[in-house]
Length: 383
Image 1 (cartoon, rainbow, N blue to C red):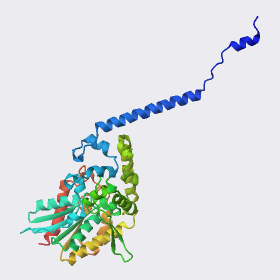
Image 2 (cartoon, rainbow, N blue to C red; image 1 turned 120 degrees about the vertical axis):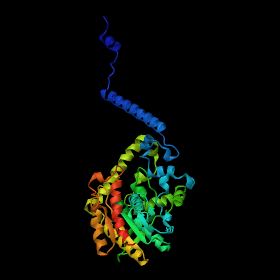
Image 3 (tube, rainbow, N blue to C red; image 1 turned 90 degrees about the vertical axis):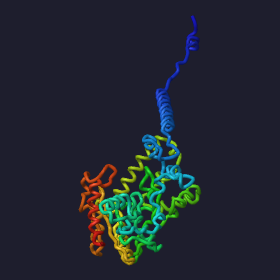
């Protein structure tokens, strides 16, 4: 008979398993496989739909997956090494393009018109309606009134020959850009790099302009290749542009990830909507109390400067979809009180009626014609 101690010594110890450790290993395994799969998907989509060197040649899906790239990242692709290699959007709206004289057109009443695509459409309609009219157009994409006013003032200060009729177009949806220095910060998906001054009023009620260090696309190209100049420009935006947001503007490693770009695109859209809503456009942009007095000061100085030069000022208030009659509420009383001729589009086509607009937000051709006829009625007095 074997001793009791020998039976105990021959038995094998049982392994004690930790269920929590097993669960942790499984979770980590799933997590690593998920990250790896997402990385492969990200890389595959990025390779399959990589944007071409020339942005205008991008297909729909290539543009879609590139929309979330940082503004700086897009600019470095849009701006070529020479002016002829620049993307079309890079060439638009620069104020130094305004520094040209108005051309005489024998037998025609010529007018200069400042604004954006809305004002360009009216100029073309006027020329179509009346062959006795001719226009010279000065515009920027979605240009705010500070851009148009600065263009007009620059031509006046240079004592350039100008048309006898000066028309200033103001677009309601561009009013938020009065709080900016450039089209960059309010056009995330397709950056518009043209710059313009941001105006404020001094204690005496005079307009004061704050400019950025970049005033032409040549200076933009130089800044993108000079780190110090580019950082200086970003600092100016951070200090003086109410729509500047570092995470959206500055390039970073997330520009190389399709999934990260999609997240940033959603963030950029949300951020822009929130910032515009904070201005309270439906309540006369009361969220930014300086907008209304600065706008009125620009309209008054535009008219006074034109009249001092023997020219006739006219203002068009373009009240587009989503902004109601807030623009008229601000500007119309001042224009009437100072006998400045103007046309408010809300009296012709309701901004709350979607049938007055096409898909991209512009007025329909029929509405453009009605607005042009109202402006033509004012121009007829000059003849």
